[in-house]
Length: 357
Image (cartoon, rainbow, N blue to C red; front, side):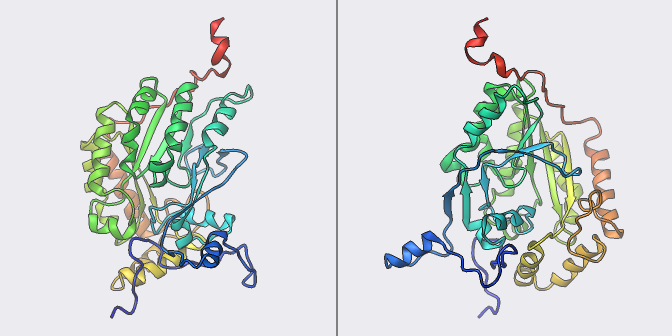
């Protein structure tokens, strides 16, 4: 019998304590309480979709090294279950754990298209690229059911407003018609996350994401349809996918990607405990090696919150990784670049009856 059994189909293997609650705080879960009262046993591994009602949907990004000015997230939590995901910690603000709760309790913002349109219609709003999925994937499995991302793309197209997308799901191809229309006016840039060329690695790191084959096909299809694609080789994890930088860059360049981006993994907040538990269960033979190498990239810690160094790391291993990425760009993307999106077409005052004059 396996002394460390894993929960099938999930990344995190435990729920870490929520730092915003004292251990003595009693937390209620209306869904589970209802099941108990009705004599039903709640499926503890089932994904629950819970509607929430935010007052705004677009957030200004204050971090200087993220590479975006504004972001929006139609969903909080993500069923993809990527074990390294920095967004896990945000689930604690909603009263849930960064571990299994993050993957199994997805908060749905059905009002996102309406809130977005209200913003873009404001006279005070100055057009600037808004990135969908600054926190969680806008094309995660919930999108197939709710189609909130598609509705938001329709709003962006209506108001001729630039938008960026970050995803690792082939579901984005469902909206190819809208993406092509946006691209025809230089209003869209897509970032496809591909962490590895190995399906075995993908399964353990990102258990509910699209296969590597489908993601590569997504890069190819988007590129063939004139939609600019950047591939995020992120995060790079020493001794797990760090050896794949050059072959991965070569492959996506051949498929039409215009550039690559990368980060070195950092295990901020509760993710350090979640990742450590996961790697000791899934890769016990190299757990200590990987953890020590991650620490060597961040001054002896699993996490680094310093702007400027947290994404790229420091030390010998980090230097080797960053040098490989530089080489990959020089070798495979020398004459390529993502286009700058057009912010001049956004004319909120001319939408509707004012267009008649």
